[in-house]
Amino acid sequence: PIPLPSMTRNQLDEMKSIIRPHELIHRVFRCVAMLLGYQDTTWAGCRAMICSKHFIRELVLLQPMSIPLDEIILIQEILTELGPTFNPGNVQRQSILAADMLEWCIKVVRTHFVATAQSRMTYQTGGGSGGSGGSGGSRRDTGTVEEDYYYQEDNDEEGKGGPNSEQERRRSRRQQNE
Image 1 (cartoon, rainbow, N blue to C red):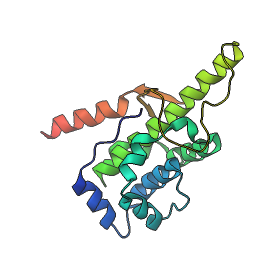
Image 2: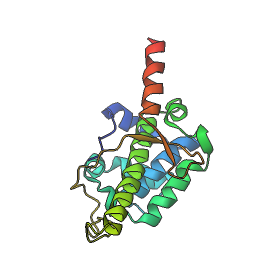
Image 3: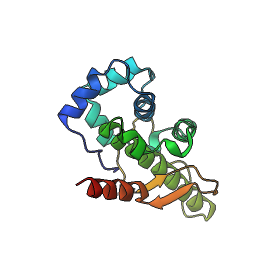
Image 4: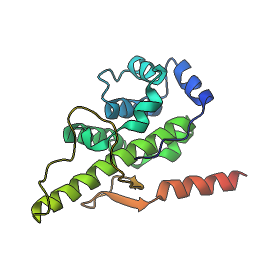
C-alpha cells in the first residue's frame, strides 16, 4: 500500500475551514478527489471530501490500479502543467498538509505507471494474462507495490525524477530551520 500522508486533526480542521484556498492547495485536493473517484472537484466538493468521516479510510484503502488509465493521465497533466514550480516544497509554503497530499498523489500516479509497465512486460513475455491488474469498481488496496519516486516533468521518456528527491530536499530544509 501507499503510505498514508502524515496529517493531524488540526491540519484537517484547518483545511475544512478554508473558504477560498490558494490555487496550489485546490489543485492538490482536486487531484486527491480525482484519485478517490469523486466527481465534484470544485473547492466545495473537495471540502466535502475532506469533511467525510471516511476520508482517511479512502486514502488508506485506495488501490491505484483500479483507477482508469485515462484518469491517471489527466491527473498527471494537472500535476505537471505548472511545470517544476508545482512541487511539495512550494506547496508547503501554503500548507504542510497539502504538500504531504501532493507527495501522496505523486506516489499513486507513479505506482500506477510502474505497475502498468510491469503488467505490459509480463504480458509481452508470455508470463501472465496481461490486463491492468484492476479489480472492477473498487479502488481499495489489495497489493503491496511501494514506489517512492518524486514525479517531475522532464523530457526523459520514463518521466522519472530521483528516488526520494523531494523528501531529501524537505528534510534538509527542516534541518536548516532548526
